[in-house]
Image (cartoon, rainbow, N blue to C red; front, side, top):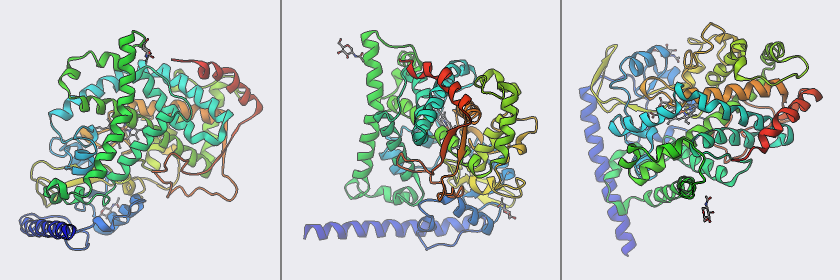
Length: 501
Ligand code: HEM
Ligand SMILES: *[C@@H]1O[C@H](CO)[C@@H](O)[C@H](O)[C@H]1NC(C)=O
Ligand SMILES: CC(=O)N[C@H]1CO[C@H](CO)[C@@H](O)[C@@H]1O
C-alpha cells in the first residue's frame, strides 16, 4: 500500500512538473524565432530519438535534413567561427547537468562548469601546467613513454590498445604525480572505467533529468537516478583520491619526486578549494589526458590499415630522416623535417572526431540574433563535429584519410583546419600536450611497425565504438617492419621500460 502511494505521488509530481514545463515552452516559442525544429515526440522532443551510440552519423543526417543551424547543431565551420569563436563571451557557458555534473561530479568537473569564476580559476591552473611554456616538462616523458610504447607493440602486439592507454596515462601521471604506470595496471584500468561511466552518462537521452531540468525539482527522495549517481561519484572519487593520498603520503615521508602535484599542493589556490574540488582537478587531468590520446592513436592506426597509400608516403619521409635500415628512432628534434607526420596527426584529429562526436554543448547566456534568427539566453549550441568533419562543403573527399590536405604551410598549427579540440574559449586546454603525445607515438610506430587487417575482421571506420570497457575497439595485426626494426626497438627502448619512479 505504502509503495503504491509512493508511486502515485511520484507520478503526480512528474506530470505536474512536465505540464508546467510544456506551458512555459509554448509561451517561450512564441517570443523567439528559431531555426527549423527537429520533429519529435511532443514534450520529450528529440531525447528518445537520439541513438545511444553512433551519434555522429545520426547527427550528420540531421544536419543534412534541417539546415545550417538547427536548434542545437551548428553544421558548418563558418557558423561555428561566427558564434562560438567571435561571440565567445556569450557562447562559452554550459547548460546545467544535474546528474553528470551535479550528482556524479559534485559540480566540480571543469568540462561541465558554467562560464564563471570557478571555471576560470580551474582553467588557469590547468593552463599553467599544460600550456606551451611547460612543453619542456612533457617532452622527456613523452620520449621515454613512447619508447616503452614501441617495446609493448613489439613484445605484446595483441595488447596494443592497453599499451596506448598505458602510454597516454603514464605521460600525464609522470608530470602530475611523479610516477609511471605499467601495462594493465589495475589503477589505470579503473580510471578508464570511471571515465567511461562519465562518458556513457553524458550521452544525450541517458539521464532524463539532464534533458528535462524540471525533474531536478522533484524532492530528492523521489529522484530515482540519485542513488546510481551517488554510487558513480563514490567510485570516481575513490579512484582519484587513491592517487592524491599516495602523493601526500610520499610528501610526508620525504620520498616524493618533484612534479606538478607537489607544487600544486603548496599553492594558495589549493588552500581555497574544497577537498572535492582538489580531487577533481587531479582526476580530470588523469582522465582527459589519457583517453583522448589512446583513441586518436587508435584512429590513425585504423586509417593506416584501411588506406595504406599514405603510410608509404609517411615512411618515405621517415626513412630519409632516420635511415632506410632502422638506424634510429625519430625524435622531437626531427619535427621540422617531418611535416608529413604533423599532417598525419592533424588528419587523425579531423578524420573521425573522437570523444565529442557531436561536439560539446554550450549555453548562450544572453539573448542573441544571428542571420535573422533570434536566440534566447539558455539556448544550447554545439558544433556538429562529425557532420562538419565529413562534409564535402568543408573538405575534398572527406571520408578519405588524406594527410596531404594539411600540407599547406600550417602543419605546426595543430588547431587550424579541424575542430578536434573544440572551438572558442572552451577549446581543449591540453591540446598541445595531446598533439605531442600523438605525434611522437605515431612517428615511432609508423617507422617501426606494419599494421594489417586481421583476415575476416575488416575495420568499419565509420562505426568504431568509443566506449569499449577497456577492450580494443577493432582488431589489427601489429608486426615489426623488418628484423632490423625489431632490433632497433630492442636496443633503444629497453632502458625506458626498466626506468622506475
Ligand atoms: C589528444 C587529444 C585530445 C583531444 C582530441 C581532446 C579533445 C577535447 C575536446 C573536444 C574538448 C571539449 C572542447 C569544447 O568543449 O569546446 C576538450 C576539453 C578539455 N580537455 Fe582535451 N583533448 C585532448 C587531450 C587533452 C589532454 C592531454 C588534456 C589534459 C591533460 C586535456 C584536458 C581537457 C580539459 C581539462 C578540457 C575541458 C576544458 C574546459 O571546459 O574549459 N585534453 N578536449
Ligand atoms: C611512508 O612511510 C611509512 C612508514 O615508514 C611506510 O609504511 C609507507 O609505506 C611509506 N609510504 C610511501 C608512499 O612511501
Ligand atoms: C555541412 C552541412 O551539412 N551543411 C549544410 C548546412 O545547412 C545548409 C542549409 O542551410 C545546407 O545547405 C548544408 O548542406
